Length: 508
Image (cartoon, rainbow, N blue to C red):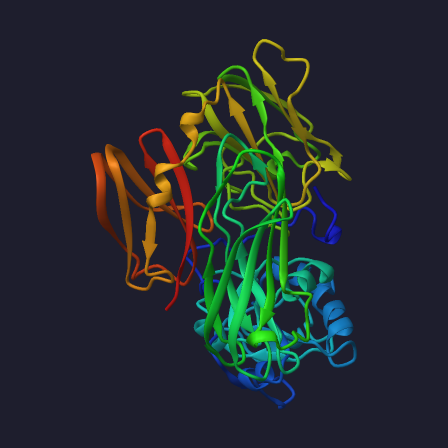
């Protein structure tokens, strides 16, 4: 599990994550600061010129920070995409510890607070000795890296190699031309690309104006297997980097197919000057099914078994069983490129693990596997794999894999799936306002009374709110969202035997 920054293998993060940092998608705090050579840099001026900004906030005494620094990942990124490259990006390295002095950056003997070396050697990007920036970005561990888009939204990224960093940065909306709209923050309606039973898909995204002229109208089309199923006409008035939430009504699918969302026209026929960001396509395959609710999971770790963690979830997203290194956890994929501590449950390397899963009922489930380093279980550093078998046939796997990046998600059915899984009555479920701010209202209007349950998860799969009622046919429920950061959230609703998931936005 080592291929992005081989130099960093075996180095542990000694600065542990203590608390949440500035939420991804928040507005980036502005700063005006001088670098160590006296040149002044104004963040918002750079962003308003159309540049993407990447900031690393570190401490000179931090050993993993030094190892990452000497990998030259930021320098290579800056050389290719900075002023001497295609001029699309700026990079800043920030010393965030107020107890150190500027000598520590140069690795000088007069350092007060500790240093691992000369951070100026071999780099061209600006270096800022400014703990106020670390405070503004609510730093709780080093190193912390942020991509800041020209629309002033900030997203935390991991200390990856230059190619992966550019891939993250390249997801930023960047204004171009006069009439230009794009699809951003897109979510197809499910985190799984395999269809088990009946699946509701309700795509949502932020329609973003990337042109210098106001965006006043857009036509958006939703298609399944090249057949148009919905057309929305949006009207409004968005200036450059203005955003409007677009939410399609849910469609129910039960077989493999292709989902596509397309902004087919803007401003009543004005041509879009950049069509590359006007379409999103997702391919869905049919999930494999087991004829039993007793399933055998078999894992073979590679040369870095401590980087693996897995979970089996029901179609609510509730975790039924788990294993592996809990320091990695279900959201840790790609999160520890400097190494990972062998925490509770960590597996040995090159070891086979078997677990019999007694699933509670017929239905749809999913297997989630995280890799801490973000390069899967196979193949550069050992032939690891995951396999799922029927209990009565532990020789022929029904599901198998191992070559992935930071996260593998596989849906599967267990036992007999019936049409009672179809969410027909839940078509009457509505959420408003969307985007929400202080409260989200959930409304259901059906003729028959059945048990009702709701759960809300954030984009990391963490349960934030739940409600259960013994029986209801119609009702209006209120979920408090005022303390939740801006972003995409998911409501899981259960009505009798029917289940559905709806995405919604929170804006601040």
